[in-house]
Image 1 (cartoon, rainbow, N blue to C red):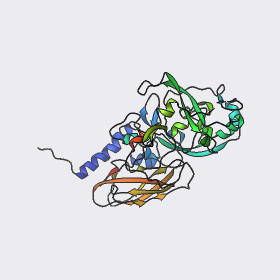
Image 2: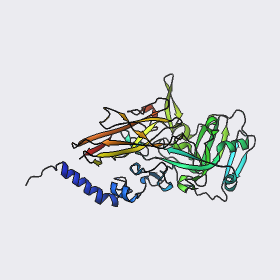
Image 3: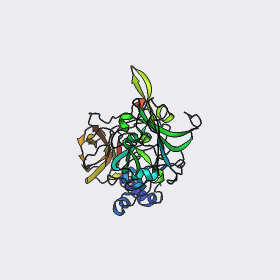
Image 4: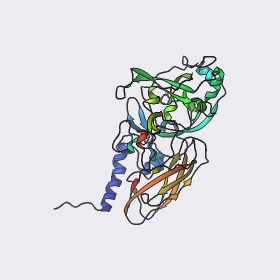
Length: 396
């Protein structure tokens, strides 16, 4: 008896059997890291974060499970460069030194007694989407889910800077965490280093830049910087230093490892490329559902949905193509606009009645008119990946 290739109906049945049988047992793995549609939608179950690296811990939010504007703490992606430091809030101190009139040290209790505010902000890892680059690049291969949105509560950084008093020549504010280690792969570090970044003084004085101690109304989880972290809305997540211990005012540009070697891209001035620190988030729209290679019922309506965000600007438009980029139309933006916060979006797709394969793309436009590109700029190295990529689905 000769073997025959399975027809479309057979393939469809095989895939549905796979989804209903194998996937739940493998939830949380990188092969197919989330539960099938019925489990997600009917039981509202969360299958767990995707492990990108075990030690240090780097965990990705399965973007297909996106439900609401706020990402719960247990579902928020985790990015770390070294093991989590163990800090006791009873002895932890935050120092503010450098080019200041009065060096100050603040305890955890003192910080929490200061006037506070709550800010909603979306954080995205600067390498989010790196898995979409070809050929394969070095670094953590994040897909879509190294991004999340939360409400952060803490003390404005500007209040601490005012308390210390800045000298007139201050240019930048260095934020240093307690996490430390040695980078043994190229580019190697000069021995053990701490994770530290600087932000411009202008950025530091913005009212929504916080020294935060709560996330979504609860004390920070250790994976997200307990007891205290910085929140720098509008900039990629590497600037929002976790396990914060030192704030240093400086009159000179900071040239640390994570500022000039990593988390840096090539900026051309007079055609001379110079490594420049990554800062503001680029405009991006992403699809949560359908998932890659999902089977979409032919001839029936389907709700395509996802989220769109950018840094210090606003997302003014999101467009969708269901024909692999041949034509585009607008989607419905949900929620009210909040600075530095993603907006959920949806599109009601009238799925063609003929079985086929479809490529779905989305693109965002920011308030300066920048449109999400279809190619990655190599000068960005492996950072700020916001190119559009087709989500291929099966219609059947």
